Image (cartoon, rainbow, N blue to C red; front, side, top):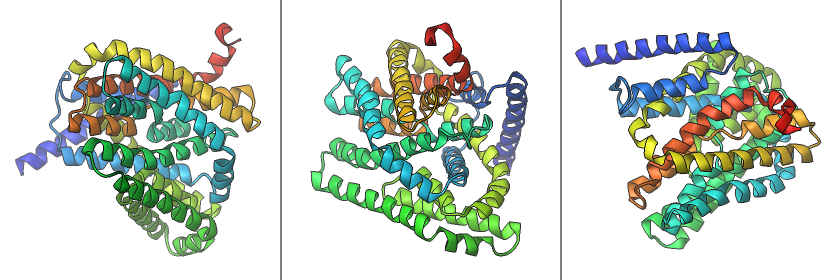
Length: 385
């Protein structure tokens, strides 16, 4: 009983603290994400005051936050729009791999790490944070912008690339037969194809079923279906975020509007907790020694992400302002990068991988939303002209 009271008190104080940060961010015209991350850093392991929350609670709350963020992102678009953007975005997706995975691999080799550790660092630098990007787009009112479908196609292609990358890395770390990685990759790709096909071809039918009844019934139906699909996708080797995103795509426009309004408050709550929990997991004492390498990587791959987004948006016929918004939006790294680094830490392949990845992710998780907020000013600056 006493332990439950302590957890509830800590959570209550945490949520009230987030409310203060949200008001402060609104007053200065910024997304609150950097403040949430820094708050997590201050109250996590090695922080100013350590909050002793259950690891299971932190993990589950974080996962639900990402799932709800990507669900609401999917509700803004249709399966047909995504399918068209994926077909036209393959070139940009390949550029994304070369320009952003490559620097991490090269940096790992330069630091004297073995090839597997270098490949893991490449994964850390490659994949943008879908959760952070979704939140920033929502906060800044850019979900309906012309460049957003191009941005989404790049994020989905990154997640599809992860469906190939993660099984291969898992086999390399475990020294298991290559055939297991091949099977895992095939299963993951087929799973995404099936979910996307259902979203495109049977979205209207699913929408009619979900739309019947009250708002309460609609909310429960959408949340239940989202968690079910997200869990199934995770089980098949695809990220839960992709499953949630494709669930949102499956709902027709009228139902999606209702569902988005109902899910919005839950999304905001769990999204805020996600970013705080993310910061809680990083020990500030480990960041100092790793900062030079992390900062160099952040600068190089921050610029390469901006370049990738600019090129992709230009191919889609989007103007200079939209290209800059696309590029700066991609800068944020987050949950997936930490997961990849965690694989190497657990396997013990390189002692410095965890600290370098943590410092790198924290730098870009804070810098990304700030750059996105001021992207139009960056375009007008003397350096950009």
